[in-house]
View (cartoon, rainbow, N blue to C red):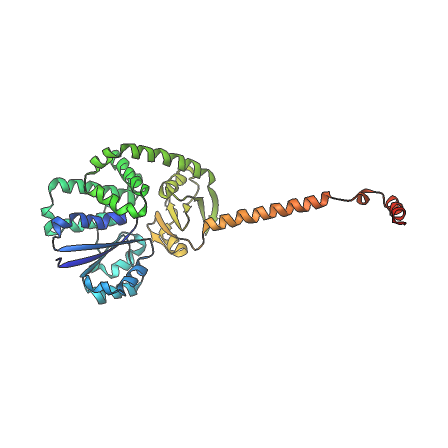
Length: 359
């Protein structure tokens, strides 16, 4: 029976799955006396998830809590962690919008081994793992394979795969392909996908899925070309935004929008329940997302949640436009259905009325 049972809370993107599954992958070698239980949730939901879990009976079974790719927004959440788990909780997060809050709990917040490298949650877990004495048990080739996967996840999540001029070109391609594969599968299959990749090397997994990767690249190119035809340029809060609706490839569309429209300060990609923001350095989109969308992230890449449903708004706009079109046509038809008397000379009309009015 495991001596330690650790609860893992994490985000539901590639980095959010990569961080906890890195622990689970190395559990047989590094943590033989430990079991991990994982819960993934959307952005901005960690306080809600943590609070609900703390009220369950099962919380007493766990010895530790690790929070990854997210930072609680409420001091109450940190109070709960301290009360129930004392020093047995850690936060592996890298988002700049919550950096000040993590600094208040620096003893429980993991920082990157190399401060000159933009970290992700997965790379923070990797840095922490390498500091554990049991890391020496991991086979050297296994270390290399996992290190490369960690770097691909980190590079994509921080957007270094696009912004770092010194990054190897093959690594850029690999980072992009890995993220595309992740989003291809339904959310319920995300854990299985990432675990399968971790169980092998990227080179082997990529070779086995070349046809799928090529198909996804072609589909994405068509998707971006189609959606970027409908960009709306507008001024919001003294900044020029490029706004577009897209339910897929949101990061890629935002990046390409900035390339095609250098006059804008930021890209705002609207999806059914959330927004993604990207900046070219003229606007801190993390602060913007925090202020207006209950979100956060990085200065140049952030996201948040919507309080309106853009699909319902669009549907209602179509209905309203259709009703107005029908009303306009009905009014036009009425105006065209004038009587003979309407078109006669008034004197002639009066004589005809008098004539036909007689019995």
